[in-house]
Structures are given as C-alpha cells and as structure tokens.
Image: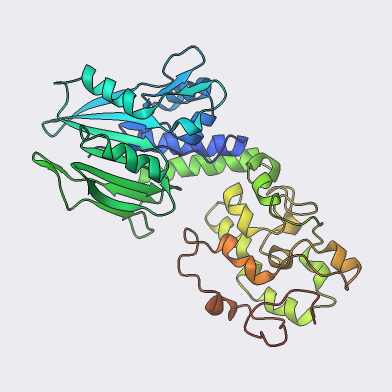
Length: 377
C-alpha cells in the first residue's frame, strides 16, 4: 500500500489550526505515509514552518515547483518508492495562484517535464500529486501523457478515477473525508480504481486513537478561545452586528418555545462533545455553542459555561437588542441557519422538513411547517 496526501491538510495558520495540523501529520507519520504534497494551506505556513514540521513529525513533504525567497525548493521535489516490484515515482506540484509571502511557485508542466527528462530509467510508474483547481488539473493531465496518474484537488465533489487520454486522473474533496484508491498492476492502472469515503463503520486504529487522545488533552490544557481558532473572521464576515443575550433571556416571553427547546438535542449539544472529549475543540464548538466568537457569545470551554449548547441565538441571531426592545426583530431567518452546521460532512441525512419536526416551535402565518423569525407574530 502506497499512501500519499495530495495537499491542503491545514485548516489555516491560527494557533488552533497549527495544533490540529500537527496532529494530522503525526497521524500520517504513524500510518506510514510516503509523501505529503504541499497545497495552498501548507504553502501559506511559510517555508521555515514547513521544514520545521517535517523535522518535528517525520512527514516527507514534496513539491517540485515551490521555492523559497533564496530560490531553494521548499521541500523534496519527489520520492521514488520501491513497492511490489515496481519503482513508483511521486512528484508534487501546486498551482502558481497559491504563491505566498516568501514562496515563489514555478509553472507545473515545465517543472514536471524537466524532472522526467532527468529521471528516465529510474522509475516504472509516475504519480503526480497536483494541488490545482479542477480546470488547471484537467489541462495539465491532457498535456502530460508521460504520467501514469494525476491525483489532485481540492474540488467541490470528488471525481472517480477516469482516463484522460492515456493518463488516469482523480480529484478529491477537501476535509480529508475521501480517499482515491488506485489499483496498480504490472500492465498499468486497473479500471477497478475508485473513490472511498471514510465513514464511521471503518475499524478504528489504536495508534490513531492515542494520537487523537493526545490532541484532545492538549486542547483542554491550552483552552483556545474563539479568536485563536481562525474561524471567527470568516464567521463574522457574513453576520449582522449584534450582541448575544443568552437563551435564558428568551424564556419570559417565549416560555412554550423554551420548553420545547429544553427537551431537544440542541439543548444538550455540549454533552455530546463532552462524552467524546471533543468539548475543547474549536471546530466542534462552532456548532455546539451559542454565539461562537460573537460579542457576548461563546469564548472558550473554560470561560463560557453559560454559552454552551445550541441556544436560541444559534438560529435566530444575536438578540440583546430584541430582548431590550421586542419590536426590534432578531437578525436571522432561522431556517437559513440550519445548513451552516447540518452540512454533508456533519449531517449527511439532513432534510429540513424532517429535522424541523423534531424542534417545531413558533409559527409564521401560512408557514407553520418552517421555523419562524423571532419577533414576528
């Protein structure tokens, strides 16, 4: 089994995301990953940090076209791996559009052709890990018949391995939930290759569970606040201004609705994190707390006991202005907020009408089947 990462594993460069990425790298090292291509988010960390992480975790980063400010390759350009009687060459490239401060990125095709010319006779199969947008990746694959496989991403949807001319091409979604499985035979790549989804029914590995446990304990100790997570800027960019009041502020005027909420899973969302020891993980906190990173909202696991669980303002928006003056409407249409957390990765079976029936409360005239906007009779 030849294990490769096409790139894009970090979630960002915040303190929390750096801790998360190191955990991913430790997991990859433990599973015997052969090469990790530099993608957009790895490049954004900078050359010094990439090299530091390689030394710290033992992961072999590759990139044939990313250079530092002195013109040196940021990582090893390739790996040639002996496996099952084959010499498999793995070359990594990233799109020039992802160049960052201190890192220049050369055009991919000339770099690969130069590598091929320099390594003739030293490999049997050539795999190109290409962190390129779909159009660029397709164009490169069409112009690179010398390769056997081109695997890249990120894309909106994973693309099952298919032939583009003589070359097999496959694309992966971000977030690490999908694997491309390419079956290589002496005669070439098998048409039985596929995309595999990582699902909970797969057996857990004890070494990886230990890695996750170490990560969870580090998060609990460091208690990253929302501002350190790297999620708040993106979150706030789409929100109207306002201050969180807390669900307890809603009970006096919305008593019946509050009773329904108290009996729902939303009211116990924090407990599900505690049960699995993920309550200190910022990624999870976004959807299991009220007002993550907002004024008056959730700050951190140790500082925000009164803002845990999915409260009223998770759906209706920061409501202090509404509490003070009920004629002031809450800022969000609740039904539009559902898919922010109930996305395909976290809630693949989500259907609004079905899920709404579990928490039904409040109505808007003519739309009793959909969640109401608070402050609207």
